[in-house]
Image 1 (cartoon, one colour):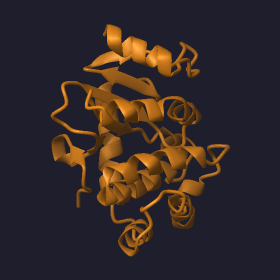
Image 2 (tube, one colour):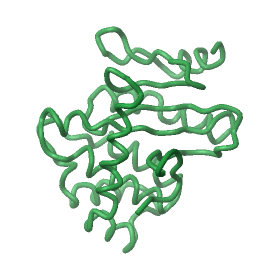
Image 3 (cartoon, helix red, strand yellow):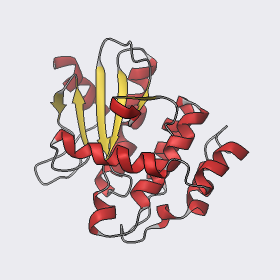
Length: 195
């Protein structure tokens, strides 16, 4: 089963915006990764605005490294819940993405995103997201298999980790060599303009 607002081979990529936009912004994140949360806090609103203005479509790709290394399945469960949110609409999906990062469990070993009750509680912060259908999909893990397939495609991009951003396949720097988030909306927009 494939959620709404997906693209790519086998429909494993969630997107935001209009796919007929002149450019494509690819955003690589991990739901349990602290750096991904910091980048989302800094740039997600700016990224969303560019898509709303029709400048580009945003394709989101998700890693599952913490599930593999620390244990648990919070990355996969959170992505499964995001897929259910995408069925409710693009607005609900992107707002839920931001809300999940705002409530990201710490330390990463605290795998609260593996709990449906936590995912549903965070969804309550997003206007228009909670519904019987959404709640059922999260509780029943409707998109868990899809989320695993989506995470598996991350390796095909050859990235060392998250977060990362590509604009028409050109890397837009958002982290330092040490992996620390090093960007702001102005830097980000300037980098897109010159690429």
